[in-house]
Amino acid sequence: MGKINGFKEFNRKTQQYQPVEQRIKNYSEFVIQLAEGELQNQGARCLECGTPFCQPNCPLNNVPPDFNDLVFRGKWREALKVLLSTNNFPEFTGRLCPALCEAGCVLGLIDKPVTIKNIELSIIERGFREGWIKPEPPAHRTGKKVAVVGSGPSGLAVAAQLNKAGHEVTVFERADRIGGLLRYGIPDFKLDKGVIDRRVAVMAGEGVKFVTSADVGNTVSAKKIKSEFDAVVLAAGATIPRDLPIPGRDAKGVHFAVEFLRQNNMRVAGDVIPKREEILATGKHVLVIGGGDTGSDCVGTSIRQGAASVTQIELLDKPPAWRTEETKWPTFPGPKMLSTSTSQEEGCTREWSVLSKEFLKDDKGNLTGVRRVQLKWINNAKFEEVPGSEAVYKADLAFLAMGFLHTNPKGVVGELGLQIDARGNVQTDGGYQTNVPGVFAAGDARRGQSLIVWAISEGRECARAVDVYLSGSTRLESKNQTLSDSLR
Ligand SMILES: Cc1cc2nc3c(=O)[nH]c(=O)nc-3n(C[C@H](O)[C@H](O)[C@H](O)COP(=O)(O)OP(=O)(O)OC[C@H]3O[C@@H](n4cnc5c(N)ncnc54)[C@H](O)[C@@H]3O)c2cc1C
Image 1 (cartoon, rainbow, N blue to C red):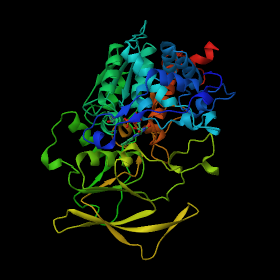
Image 2 (image 1 turned 180 degrees about the horizontal axis):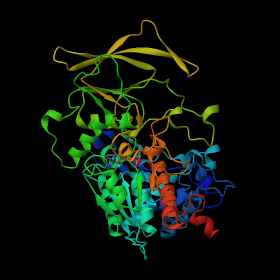
Image 3 (image 1 turned 90 degrees about the vertical axis):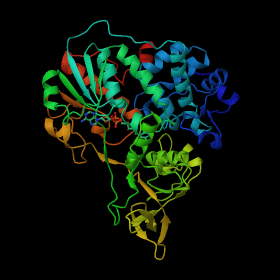
């Protein structure tokens, strides 16, 4: 794999970004990809390691050693084939995945890991550029019909796989556009929405039908869909956000993060937001409550809207910038290791170990600030308030970005009588089958709030379960057996 001693010859190089002052002027993606030759050198850094931990670290079981090697050898089309054998949508993960694979790269033990994510994105983008990615409708149709509820990455992956197996798939989406959180959560500067449209066009060309503005269990009867289709897959996401029920919560200017992000993505898409509903950070002091990805997206969006100041606070302690016993290689450290997102780089103040106590408002009910207190964490398990540390953040807008609790228990879940588990997710049988025969669940609706790579993985595995249910067996790829395995 790669070039013998390539890791000694070439240092890790990653994609670059446009300078901050340039990129915050608009909502466009700002990544500057490496040139082809440089990417080949990066592929050359892949070791012929005995056990490539990059692969099991990836929920899709992607095979970086194989596509790294093919890129190093300039065999881009073959690399694309390997990549697509495990991942339907590398254009999403190549842009947005936190790269669990790179955390497990063996080279990372002694040097910087191989830049797998950049290589992945370059392979798929080249595939589109060269016209290698075209609709490939299945040769045979089974006559079975499947309804997929929800068009986020899990619903799209289920649909793509079941269509490939020859079933007739219809995706029902309550929003006016396809894509789930890819469309209406993640900002355009991280994912240009044309990337979703391009993929949806390929899927439509393969025969997948898309129905938008169809809220199943509300405007569209779930029971009717159940009776008209041979199987139903619920991929409706974990849409209930965690609230912060402290005094003053009703202040004007306190919003859930996704309300703000959704509205901005609609605006960028050309929609007109009624004046009275507008949430705009322009000229305002913004407080983002929650230190994760969603909070970061609020930071970048507020900065682009021209906020007067942006502060992001986190309840937990500031994590170390290095691996610890808890996050030792090849673990993906996630939020347990300090990282700085591109949005945070653009100019926000970050504070940790902060508890919000009260939203303060003026006599018209408008938010004016947030009373807070500093915390002292004891063994990362419980906290104490630091006496005398009370202070007030000046804030005209506060965005609640503290994660999502679970899927909506009403609507389609309620109408079909689906069981939910102790965490509020749709309960399945250890696989993807719910308590109602013929109804399956995948993605954040089943797993709880997670990552795009997990949503795609769930979608692919769920499609196998549905195919077995409909056909008695399946030839869809299992994540335990990849194309690369069969080539070896
Ligand atoms: C702001 C934000 C930023 C994120 N950034 C990243 C990131 O950078 N990288 C990463 O890996 N992950 C990120 N995530 C997480 C990632 O987006 C999710 O894990 C992923 O989208 C889950 O996919 P899904 O298909 O299960 O659900 P979703 O993407 O939530 O899609 C569910 C879809 O179902 C639809 N739906 C719900 N109910 C119904 C109904 N009754 N009828 C019809 N349709 C319905 C919804 O409208 C939605 O379109 C982010 C999440 C947020 C909120």
